[in-house]
Length: 303
Length: 314
Ligand SMILES: Nc1ncnc2c1ncn2[C@@H]1O[C@H](COP(=O)(O)OP(=O)(O)O)[C@@H](O)[C@H]1O
Ligand SMILES: [Mg+2]
Image 1 (cartoon, helix red, strand yellow):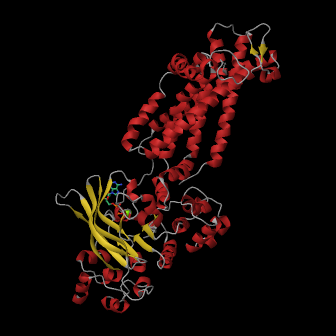
Image 2 (cartoon, rainbow over the protein chains, first blue to last red):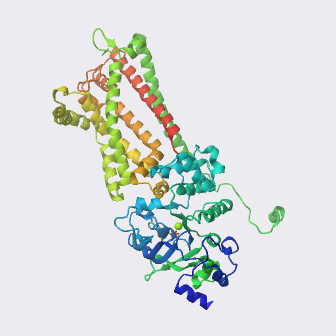
Image 3 (cartoon, each protein chain N blue to C red):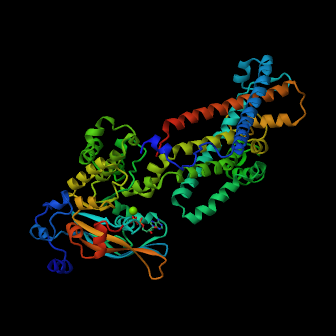
């Protein structure tokens, strides 16, 4: 156990061949612990995002402070922690979505494949073409299913046959068979789970590099949730995925790495700021966390 | 524990589910609200009925075909002629010019305020815009006659513009209804959920694309409603057209010349003393009835349009 901790501090442990999944992701989160990590080493992944001392303020109050960790390519990274600890705030930094909030300001550096996302010459529209987002509440446009998918490709002026693009995206999101006969009907006629998968399909249609998901299942029933989790695991080989969830089983089932956030009262005890307590391999976070606060949270003692 | 056992439990105070005291207040309020609704319905019905009554009398004197399709309007001349078309075209021309002005400017203002302006700017500009709607229309009328026509239109187009003309009246009526378009459309666009904008931005949409392809269509029913209301106001506007448009019925589309609208005729004829039951008196009602029907048809049309294209977003 002490070995393991030292190793974690030295460097993020490497993993085995790409695509090899750990059992723990699919099964019981209380399954094999520390010893399980060793034989499953993977080649070191390149970082899609490197967060360096990221602080986000709304007005003058920091919502999250000094966040530093790397998000690996074609991995699923989960952000967990109690409500209000800044998970949404942080994930919205990754595609400059908080540009839309007046008064939101990002400090520190957010590197995307080594490029500073907040450099002066970066166009947020270009950023969002590459980094798609799925939101907590399904937000289809009040248009037909077809037009929802076609929106992104049309806006970006993508080449190719639109019918094919739409079909490919819907098949990708395992939604095609359910909706192929009613592509021209309004997306609001779909169930909540279907709407959310439509939003995922819509994000896939523009062929992004990364997909950000902010509590994508929190408004859905368990069956729809299961479908979306399966979908994430399917997509993982092609995309880097960052998911915010407050469902710890979900984090344990789908993610490779987990960042655990918490809120701290600042010195004058007036304002609460989110921080990352621990960032590590998911099975480590859930079976052998280094910080007692993480342990208390994942075992359900607090939060 | 089953129900009977529970009822028999000793010491339980008796339960009463009746109201502790009668709620008279609610009944009174409800009565007043019903009354308010009925007053407006009754007023409307009364107005329409009196219009219909006098119109029927009028049509007893003048054949309906002569009235609707005649192209000469001279009801007070001798011999009189009752072709209402010049008034109808005058009204529609002024309405059309007004909407050509108010639609782009009003929607532009609405889009700017809702999507582009910083919150502080919006909070300042919107009330100012709405204040414009409170300026008495007679002020607009004299502005058109004493400034806009001579200083702008005649300076630009010279002699082809008479001092009383349709163009000036139409443009200024357009300015008059800009706040109607801008304010209601801005409300409709601001009401589009932020989640839709975020969804569209998240797919790599630019500000303009998000505005025109998501926000605007989602707000379309409110936007159309604002245009219809503006059109109704423009068609019903009286003061500006009376003061700046002149009172010469024109059967033609010469925008530089004086023309008369239905409202201007009604106001102008009604202001002199005309004997109840005289032919002049009856024409006022007949023209009023026609104006009512035209705006009614416009409203019905746009309600259907809004139903058909409305996008429900929640
Ligand atoms: N648009 C905003 N304006 C001001 N404060 C905000 C805004 N969004 C979030 N916050 C604040 O930032 C903190 C973190 O919120 P959030 O990122 O939504 O947390 P989480 O997603 O973890 O529940 C909270 O204290 C919240 O009140
Ligand atoms: Mg959140």
